Image (cartoon, rainbow, N blue to C red; front, side):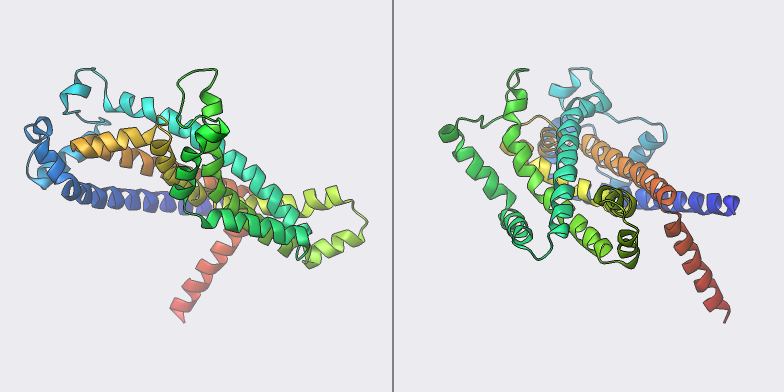
Length: 319
């Protein structure tokens, strides 16, 4: 049984890597077509890169196989003698700190509000929380960011990121608040739905008849199910947050991935762009595999249900 499970997981990992390879191949050719005008404008790139897309792809695959990040063509960056790997992580560290911080704040606030709303379902407080969150999220992110910028001088908060230990955190408060709206809304909606379903379930009602306290009822019946539910969507939620953070970084001049990407696209630096996408997809793949392992440990029934479905499919084929 254990060996069968291991083989199945190995097959899943192989499928994931095949999808990764297919995705980065499609992205490679799409990006090359998209930035070809920028490549031709930048002589440093155009003079050092092949005009044949097949040759470019072969060089990209060779860099991938040899774990090389590739060459920087533009002289202003190449003169610093920094590899793409070093250059990428010099900006990536800001984005990862910014987004992870927002993500955990959103996770905590969203779940607290969601559980509270479920306990107060169809009451005035539930309506107020839902209406407030829905109203804020319905406003486009860029409009909220512009309003925040224009009112900075009135309310006295920084309109741009400040490179100073004393004021850097203060200058991130408004961008953090704005960026967290969407993820708070997503976590709130999911935790509210899951908690509400548990509260009206037979096993929860049975637990209540045993005389358990509210704290024990929450820990025993709600917390684990809520954790499993959020783990199932944690990656897509983080991807959404990561994407929206790029906009906020540009608006509030926060160092990070947006600077890296805008420079790479404007200069036609194909190796910089492909390193970004390759590393991002690989990171997501690893995170997905780890997430699946955690879910299978927390909830063995998920793995059992998958096996039962596969067994039913095989039986139907033989009928």
